[in-house]
Amino acid sequence: MRLVFMGSPDFSVPVLDALVKAGHEIAAVYCQPPRPAGRGKKERPTAVHARALELGLDVRHPVSLKSEEAQKDFADLKPEVAVVVAYGLILPQAVLDTPTYGCLNIHASLLPRWRGAAPIHRAIMAGDTDTGVCIMQMEAGLDTGPVLLRTATQIGAEETTLQLHDRLSALGSEAIVTALDTLPTLTPVAQPDTGVTYAEKIRKDEARIDWTQSSDEIDRQIRGLSPFPGAWCELNGARLKILASRMSEGSGEAGEIIHTPAHVACGAGAVELLRLQKAGSQAQDISEFTRGTPLPKGARLS
Image (cartoon, rainbow, N blue to C red; front, side, top):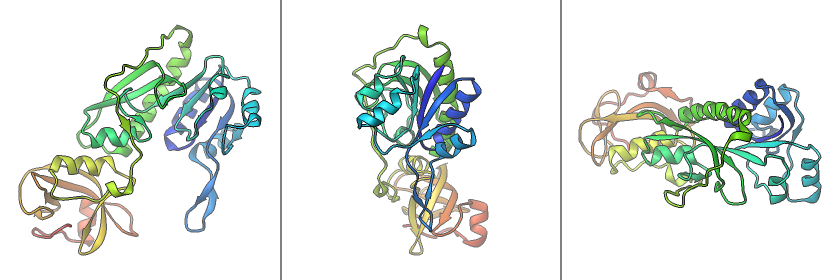
C-alpha cells in the first residue's frame, strides 16, 4: 500500500520500521523540524527523521500544514493512506481528506480513556491496571475518531512510563500492520460518550514528591514520571530524582528512611526506591548509588 508516514519521537520509529518490513511503499515521511539541542544548541533531527534518512526515505518537515502549498505537496504524493503516530502537528481537514482510506492514528490508550498528549504517563499515575493501543480513523476532534482495531495489555506493578512506552510502541507496530492488511474489511466503531478522560501534557510542577501522600500515590508518581521529567525530592538540600520504585511496608515520619537500602516512609505505607539520579550525574540502581551516597536508617528526604 502506498502511504505517507507522519511521526516524530522515539515511539514512532518501530512503527516506521514495521511498515517498511511489511513491504509498504513509503511515499514520504513527515516529522517535526530539527531543533537546537544539547550544550552547543546544535540543530538535532527527530528520531524519525534520523531513521528515515538511514532507510533512504524522502523526509519532509514543514512547520505547518495549513498553507495551500503544503497541502498540495501532500496531495501530490497520492497516498492511499497516512499513518500518524505522535507527529506533533494538527492535520487540517484538507489533509485528512486526501488519502483514499484517510489518516490512521496509533494512539497509546484504550480510547476514549486518555485522549490527548500524555496517555502513557497518565495511565500509570492514575493507577490503571490495563491500557493498550487503538488504531483510529482521524477526524477534526482530539482523538475522537472511530476505532478500527484495539489491542489491550496489563500494566505491570513496577512498570515505568519508559518501559510501558516501549511495549506499546511494539504493540502499535503490530496493530497497524494488521490493520493495513485487513483495512477494507475493518468496521469503524464510534467511541462511546461515557468513559472519556483527557491526558493533559505533563507539567514540571507535578514532579515534586510530597512524602505526606500515600505510598500508592507516590509510587505511581515515580513510575509515571520516569524518565521524564522525573519525580524528585531533596537529599541534604540537593535535588534527587527517583526513577523507579515499588511498594513496601512499614511506617515512620514522612520522608524517613525506615529500612536500608532505601525504604522510605510515606503519609501512609512506604515505598522502596530502586533507581536514583543526582543532578549532573548518571542514573544509578540503588545498590550502586548507596556505595557512593549512603542512605542510612533515619536519614530524611524532603
